[in-house]
Image (tube, rainbow, N blue to C red):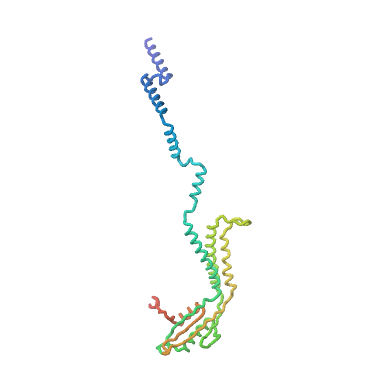
Length: 280
């Protein structure tokens, strides 16, 4: 019976511990401390200045993260980020220089159908010098060279005039078309950058790279111009001592270049410098 009474007491005590709230087992002293702390906090809150509270609220608003900004502020920030950061002055300066230089393509096409006429003076050794040539022999060599390049004598006097037919070249036509293609591609790139949203009423948004389709017309323009006729004028003189012959030539620059190299002439006022292969 004594054991049963102890077991019943233990069981009853355990049930009370499980059912009773935790505050029921606190001491009166602990309760009084909590109550005193709560009352002290309440008194401090009643003594707070409203201006200080407003300042604290403003500080809290200013310290809010950017993720809770309004949609208008976010849109404005995104627009500012998308603005170009390059110098507009340098951009438009470069654009102006490009526009001024672009007509050079048309000039190149136009000049391809006509000869580049120049006047140059060359010197040769006269008959008084060992291995030199007199004017008649010098004129004979020039005439043989011109006839070998399909030129005929149309006037023989103090000034000899040669006339020849220069045939059109397929390689020149393709070269002009290729140069025009590069020029149109660069122009299209500039226009595509400058006028990105340009649109026509019927076509819509313009693709500027279609300008490259105009490049074959450069070769067609050159080819339709046909063969050209070139005139070359040659005048020969000699000094009083017959030690030097002076040959003045006026005509196509390409033919003049080939002539002085083939006849081993030296340009007046110029000094010939032998190259590495020639000296070897």
